[in-house]
Amino acid sequence: MSSDDPDLPDSDGAQSGGVIAETMADAAPQSAEPLTRNKYSESDLRLRFTSCGRCGFFIAAYRIDHNQEYLAAIEEIEAGWLTLPWHPDMRELVNKSYGCPIDITAYFFEGSCPECRRTFSYAELNKNQPALFLIKI
Ligand SMILES: [Zn+2]
View (tube, helix red, strand yellow):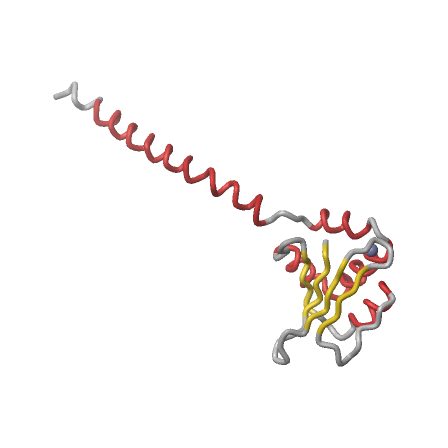
């Protein structure tokens, strides 16, 4: 009987080893997920936008007034588009940065930076929802 006692911890050890193996198998896709979901950091964005004077000015000015929304938008970048919530003060900012006035009655506008050709869009999808400003990163 006393020889069986040392076997008990061994069988427990084998079980926990199995759990560890399963945990490691689970860990592989989990560790890959943040890499695919959170592709861009704030410094990535800063580098991309400051390479152009106009785009650097636009993003710096947006951040001064709407930093929280800017940081949240970085988390939601999809297919290379940064989607910023639209604010009425942005009409003047877009005009100052890119020299294109967005008409107050427009519900859709597409433009590009005269210097680096970065494309952007203003879209009012629904009267009941805030408009969006999408800019390629
Ligand atoms: Zn630009």
